[in-house]
Image (tube, rainbow, N blue to C red; front, side, top):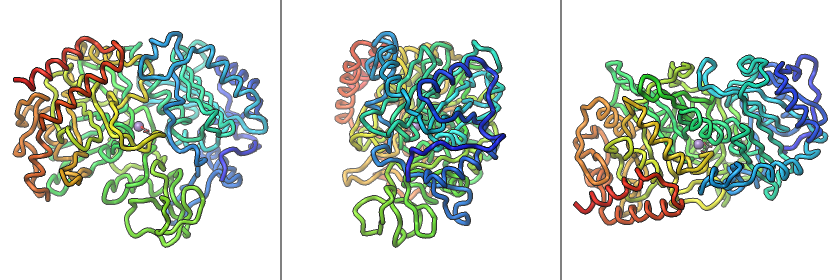
Length: 601
Ligand code: OXD
Ligand code: MN
């Protein structure tokens, strides 16, 4: 299977939907002059176009058709084995000064980076088709919604963007013909998929992105991490709103009282699972619904934060997904799904580590090699993915298309921590909550290239995604807090704490409803808690643990804090703040001092 495929010739009526906006036409001509494609394909997002591109992708070995009975209208793509995750080391924020990008981003001077990329892009699409994808991020009638155009030489990108964004006419109409309208310019080329020529570059002042040398989703679906988070966070600060790496869920009581919660977790920490949670039997009548599983755009409305999901689909990690861990995700990916880097069974089905049932006796692994249960290699890559339309989700929130968004009652920060962090605690106030987010840490996963399992500070889960100086980002959060008359309560959770036997203390998944219920109780001012140095902690009787098969001593351990571990944690916060070289706002430095002082009381 290959990523790079020769040009295609569409029949009349396909690939010719040119927008009227002169600024778009001029930009496309400029990129075409540079990259010299065989032809230009103007995407409209229609069913007919999609069917044509799928047919071409099957012929050109870009996709494999899966068994129509087992996974209807679904396909498998294999990326180049050197290209399976986001490449943070080759991701750049290009601003006039290094200070604007700040201490957590790779920086380049824009003119220098443009020159380097233009040199790489010269003639890069020769013999290939150049696709122009119009799309919007956000519900069609939201004030927050942004228009983007992505140019790409990959059909896989076009097919994925149709799932992940609202694509085609809706964007052309929203942009209109005003040559000065705001829209994002995204250019992607696979080049030769060589890791030494792989760069993901953002030019926030120009609202522009250029990504070269990769075919992996997180690097090339420019709507997602690049526009909705990196450029999005930059625009959000300028325009007074928040672009965050957060899921959004609705939780409704049996009496019909509904709250919405936004939660930030680093990549591959179970955001999709939490967003689709099925409450355990004991919580009969409670309903959890999904607004979004990865990104939240939040604006201030009537003194509250109101959130929309800018995306239209889910690009989730496959391994570990099962009817036990996430039945709603399983139902979502049973049809109309584009899989990347999972294993292919002999009967044309997909398989991955952690799927329900016994492993197949034989399969083709994600690299295209024979695989049996005795193989040393994994059948599916640990960062293999599904792209599936959010309309497939059986628990999709009915207000997902509401332009004004949904009102947020609580914000949750969380990471993957084997120790130190209790199951849940509540910040004393907004600035303390910002401190919890700013000092968040997690053990690294396969979602990004590099070592797995190392604890790294990942403020608000935005370390790889904040498109400007992290100090200014913290300050922006503090400023937003000042404008909120009814701010959400802020919590920290950790599903991953381990006991002395190195086993997880908490079952997670559906049982996280118990934690969510305590959070909702706190929002309703009915939940009990005890004051501790780190914030409000529930005691075991404050959390509904009925029918939970976990020993009481494990509950006590996971709800509690270890003062020695927290001394190390405090030192970790200080080291992290120091490593940022003086950009951390006074308010947060003060929060650290107050936290340290509370431990001494
Ligand atoms: C993702 C990520 O793909 O965070 O959502 O890496
Ligand atoms: Mn993510």
